[in-house]
Length: 127
Image (cartoon, rainbow, N blue to C red; front, side, top):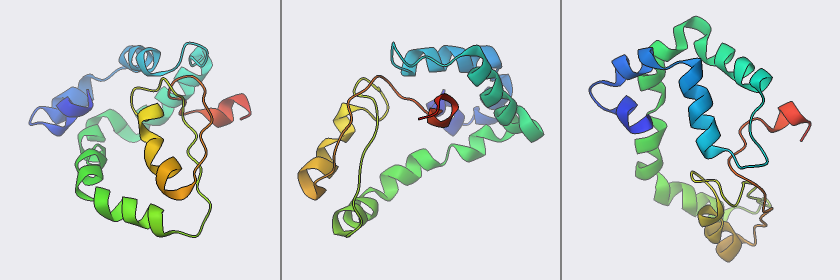
């Protein structure tokens, strides 16, 4: 979906996004023990839908190319900081899981908490 939003059909793809599609996407990326509840999905969908959010999703997804363009700068900043850094993501997260841990651990002494999959709503469960 994210790649489609970046393309020429992005505005249309965003408008077709639905609560059902949100639930399907989260079911794929959340870990087996960290699936979102219906109430969490409802709350997230309400935030997405606010002020016609799906119609502008193609404008918000620009972080993907920015992430590639700014990688060296951002990595250098993480490596140079004196601020303690921690990476907390699920090991099985297909987006930012175990494969993302090597850099902070190897270069800055970061720590990693192995858990489930991607979990974008930690406050909802009191984490």
